[in-house]
Length: 355
Image 1 (cartoon, rainbow, N blue to C red):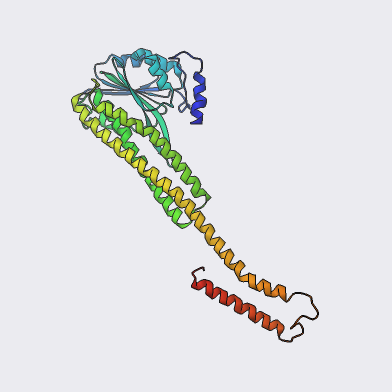
Image 2: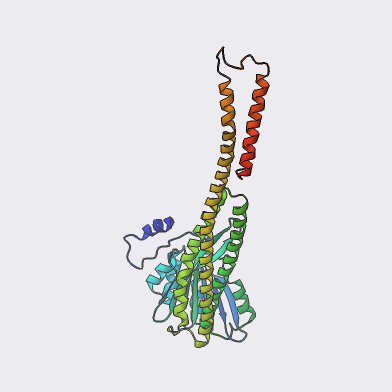
């Protein structure tokens, strides 16, 4: 969040529609993946950084998916936007990788922006990048920050001609892209569930300061996920209503399914947030209980030594005419009295369940 406001300072004083990349550079150069196919046997997949090949792909009558990888080369993004007739304000949103998920409708296309999430095994946290989707009647144009994505199974289905993708139009392709991203959210929830389960076990056995740090980390992760997922409810609600003419009635049925999946993910996130909040209370209770047990032991020890200290201090006074001072059995008797006193007190504490 702090980096977001620091990055936004780059836009101060610039005219609306001025293209400035806001975010991290996650690729060395911008690449363009072009995939063309029809409902029969035609398939063409290529990767290039030549804008001339991009222009040729626009004019083809086949279904076309153009994926742009890397957003830091602003001039190339501007050329791509000009080739497809994309509004400058939309390009400005594409280059700002801290955008809130949303949907915007233009005359010839719609623009959808959402977060593509991954689970970082090395650091046990959620990693994210921004995905922008531009859907028209003849092509799907996507922008992502790096080459890694969740679309490899989708590319394989298109290449092998499996499923309904080849027979449907680009609106179904846009649905398939959205569905792939949403389905990957369930994997994130599964990983978070495993982390919460392990954390619960640690809380009930031996909570430490690292446990508290882990709880706060999970709390921040769930807050970020909630900010990334909650707006999707509005997006898919608008899509599945059918008010946007770019989606066929047969595709709207699938969009309703994605909408239901989004609701399930939101419910799961809310449940996890409640669990993490209760974990914080459990941690504080565990630490307080552990401290109380320690204080109880110290209190019992101090209480045991109070009468013993009184006896030793009393007979440690240096008075010549003090009674029993010259008595032969005085020292053993004092030991016997102190031991009996300690034993009686221990038995009393045990019966009161203070030990």
